[in-house]
Length: 130
Image (cartoon, rainbow, N blue to C red; front, side, top):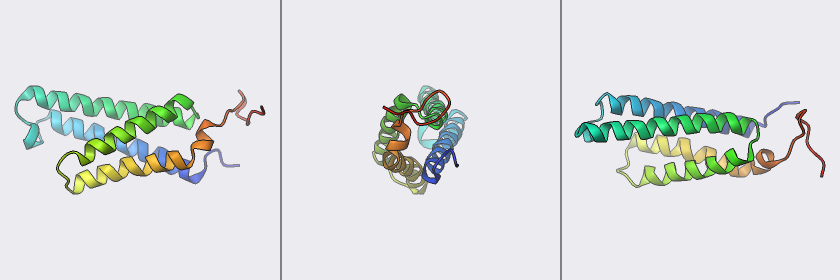
């Protein structure tokens, strides 16, 4: 029997992709590769730090969600919702739309599969009976 339903696997992969995208954005921002935030340098490093923190949080949440951690489920919903709102609060370009999609699709999939993430399991990985 497959450990993860297909939509759960897609959500986890998209969370990992989102983490990679934020890490890359932080790296480019830190290197001064984004003209709109290149000056002052403090702003550049704040943006890079926030992007790296988001990348680390998304990667960690993806791992914990794979283990069906209830707290990670709710934290992932909150973080993805914040990222989605902030994505549309800025000027919208093609990269913003891609980032928005990579945040909203797993958000929707998490909600769709909430029963899988929130189901209790025994230590051996089988479903617990109440």
